[in-house]
Amino acid sequence: MTARPLWAGRTLALLGVLLVALSLRTPVAAMSPILDRIGRDIPLDPVVLGIIGAAPPLAFAASGLLAPSLARRIGLEQALLASLVAMAAGHLVRAFAPEALVLTLGSVLALVGVGVGNVLLPPVVRRYFPDRVGLITSLYATLMSVSTAVPALVAVPVADAAGWRVSLAMWMLVAAIAAVPWVAVLVRRRPPAIAEPVDLARTGPIELGAVELGDAQAAATEAAVEHRAPPPRRLGIRLLRSPTAWALGVIFGSSSLGAYASFAWLPTLLVDQARVTEAAAGALLALYAFMGFPAGLLVPVIAARFPRSAGPLVALGGAFFVVGYLGLLLAPGAAPVLWVASAGSGPLLFPLALVLINLRSDAPQTTVALSGFVQTVGYLLGAVGPFVVGILHDATDGWTVPLVFLLAVVVLVLPAGAVLARARTVDSEL
Image 1 (cartoon, one colour):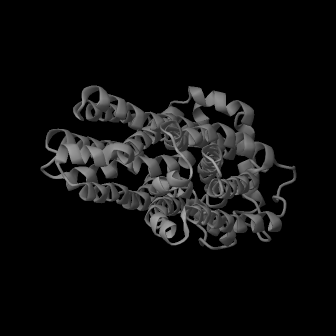
Image 2 (tube, helix red, strand yellow):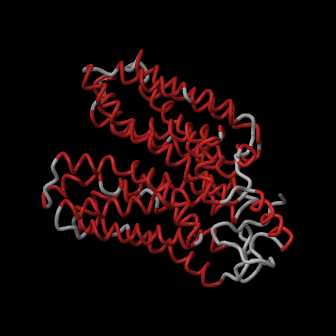
Image 3 (cartoon, one colour):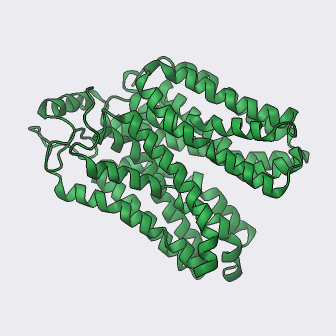
């Protein structure tokens, strides 16, 4: 496909994608640094804290089932707008929560909005930027990392200056601003330049006052691809038979499991194993998170430009995990910076999975269904990580068995990488 100028006729869509990406981690990252302050006003027992801690991956997994159906019923852009409304409402509900139950419900509402946005961004990129999938995915994956780091940095200073309720409520503005371009898109859009009415959740090229993504011939070609694809309501079931869909779910899930387990337990592990101070452990956790930036920028572009690169990239991500975990297991105090940097580079599998959702699907409705499937499988695996690592640590009073468990998870990516190296689309397997 011939690349068009990035801003040509799709400025609103580009701004919308980038602003949504900046919203997608604020409900997760803005709360944990100030839980102690919240607990002074609202009693938070261990059960509530456990629910809040487990809510993100579980809500994201549930949203993988919800988002494709929502997009099919009301349209892709409308569903994405609804996710932003849910995020904004969730921020406000928990900011003004009088008790733990309302705080929990507000968090769940915001996280479901995030989960729906997670699922819908890849098909939105496909719809508006089919010629720039790698670039746009790299940009929004990087901004998602920013939306994880910034709330964690500013939550405490804002709570000190204005109170924890303001610290939580202010992120509603990010979601509200992100909604503005999509409202404008829906107001300006004209019907697709094809003869027959098309379901908004399934269409490819559309117009926003001018031709957005191609002419009538391109739209007709996209419609022909959709016509050959399975009916949308059957896609979720048919994906269960797709090796490519399962391979994407496995690499997404392996990355999520390692990341969630590390954010939950890595500082404690470093204090116990590497004998670093708590301050140093916090700095090393920041290093772990920072290693996602170069991966988010480079991996989608490489995967989009070189179709056969998926297998080697999966192997590279697995190798980074193995080096990091083995270092922490065998010589934790020798080079903790190196081990943490290597383990933090393993989640390059996350942006790789995001871009492959588009590259391994032909029809737009397949992209929506595949995104939901991959993120449901992936976040369910991600939710398992902190629990299993914690249980194994408590049962053995050490970190050897938990690290062996994390190494065993990495083994799963090897057959997944072999499947993805074949560069087959999900549509060809249905």
